[in-house]
Amino acid sequence: MRAMGLAISQNHFDPADYQAFMEKTRRCLTVLRQLLAQPGFGDGPASLGAEVEFYLVNPEGLVQPINTELGERVPDPLLTMELNRFNLEYNLSPQPFAGTPFTAFEAELQAATAAINRAARPLAGELVTIGILPTLERSDFGPQSMTDLPRYHVMAEALRNLRGDPFHIHIGGPEPLDLYMDDVTLEGANTSYQLHWRVPVAEFANYYNAVQLATPIVLALSANSPGLFQHRLWDETRIALFKQSIDSRTHIDKAWHLPPRVYFGNGWLRHAGDAFASSVALYQPIIPQTSEEEPEAVLAAGCVPELAELKLHHGTTWPWNRVVYDHHDGGHLRIEMRALPSGPTPMDMNAGGLFLVGAALSLVESMAEITAFMPFAYAEHNFYRAAKFGLQAELIWPDPSGCQLREYPLLEIAERLLPQARQALSATAMAEAEVARLLGLIEGRIANRITGARWQTAVVERLSRQASGPEAHRQMLAHYIANSQSGKPLHEWTLPL
Image (cartoon, rainbow, N blue to C red; front, side):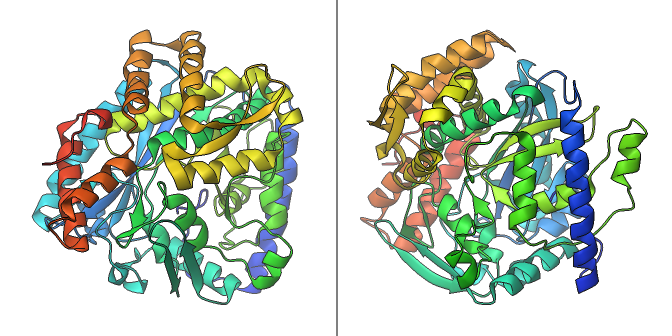
């Protein structure tokens, strides 16, 4: 739930701060449009980056709120504190979109995880990569669980004030969940794997729309969050929970059909700048901290401005695929793919990320045609169907002729996309062995009809024959952690006897 942009150094802002911030944000938006119109802006080699979020647990598999202590013991600038004290995030070093970038991610993540676990061990803590921890209890959430950083206090207070009422969580499924929260800390129940992809600015809309179209298929194959508080809910419960846990809309906002701050999209993207314009037009600022930069002057001097206010405001909206502006390296744009859950293993996370990139690459050249005849509402429908039903979802998809829309089983679409993704990636500078290794994991999930969510559910069902619900979830988590630490990819896991 980090806000992108400026570091936040104060806990309180007055109305004048909000007015000044929005005026500066609009100026930044004008400058961004000028930047994006410059021939050659953002040109450069494709690259990849990734962020991995973790839970911290104790030996009993319950949350261990020690992230601040770990931050002091592990002075790594790539390690950041998340909203709740039992969550961490590690930001992996960017890699060229060539050779073996995901192998580099795995090596870096393995070294970082080992260092953090060494520091956590004396504090009775351990890292776990999983979408939603299955042993969570209601008592794990509340003001006492929030990391004591100004940006989180300001953000939480602003979202609560905007809403004016408790946050209502209602998620259907086999064992529906309905509850109210007075704060936003339930957002911290969600942990994810976020992949960044630098793509050409001139073709940005087609790349972004291709990622939007492909995301539901990869989301279903990567599902790893089948419930909350021992309730069996969606295959990827994070999607519903994140949206509802910080939904700051009032009844009037909903009557106007204002999108929530967590959303899939407002339509097919026509231009990269549209994403920033939408966030400025639709959402009130919640962290109005301004910088000293004069963006117009920086641009006039032939330099690339930081546009800190625009980045900060845009970072307090959470589309599942986000457009990112970065002023480094001459300035460029990235797609931040935020929908995939954390876990089960580094290889599994990277397999989902590579499949999403490869599937999008295979669709890019067709996106102008597809977006002309496929309503965006169908893509959004696919996203929520995939999150709720996982591998059993049925999605709306172009038929092989590319001229008609039909409803297909998700697995049928995945089986069609996999060789297309492999072929698209073969035309890039990615190493053939890297592609074969990771897409082989996706092939294994499809063949075995397995996801992290399905594995967790099957194990809990088996263990529940002899143990209570909470105990079955605790034992399942212990098996999950052992499998994850073994390094075996998910499709090779077996069920405990």
